[in-house]
Image (cartoon, rainbow, N blue to C red; front, side, top):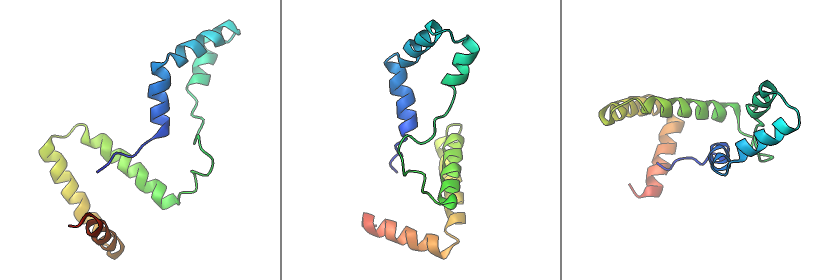
Length: 112
C-alpha cells in the first residue's frame, strides 16, 4: 500500500531542514515579539494550503482520521500483531456490500 502524501508533513520537515523556523523566529524576535507570542504564532495550523482540497465528504474525512489512528497503533505493534490487527479490521469492513464491491474492483485492477 502506497503511503499517502501529506503536504503539511512535507512542509514541516523540509522547511525545518532549511532553517526556516529559526530564521523566522529570529526575525520575529528582532521585530519585538516575545517568546510566548512567537510560540503562539509558530504553533498555529494554517489549514489546507491548497484551495479546493477541503471538499471531502464528512464520511471520507472520518475514515482518514481512523486511518491515521491505525497508523499510530501500528508503530507499537510487532509484524505478527499488525497482521492480526489488519485481518480483523478487514473482516469487519468487508461485512458491507459496497466495501466488497470496492475490494473486487481493487483486486481486479491488480490482476488478483
